[in-house]
Length: 80
Image (cartoon, rainbow, N blue to C red; front, side):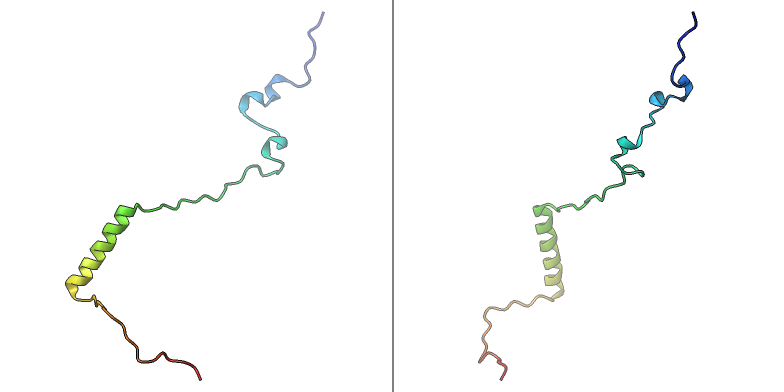
C-alpha cells in the first residue's frame, strides 16, 4: 500500500517559518503600519518651580526686574 499523497510538499508549508496570510494583516495588503506615538513629557512641578526661581533670581541679579505696586490710569483710552 502506498503512502497517502499530501496536499502540498511539506517544504512549502509556511507554518514553521512565520509567514502569514493577507487575513492576518488586518485586511490591508501592506500589513500593519507604524502608528504615530506621543513622546511628550510632563516636567515635574518642583523642577518647573526651581527653574522659574532660578530665572527670576538671575534677572534680579542683573537688575532687569521691575516691581509695580499700583497702576493708576487717569482715564481709559476709548475709540471715538
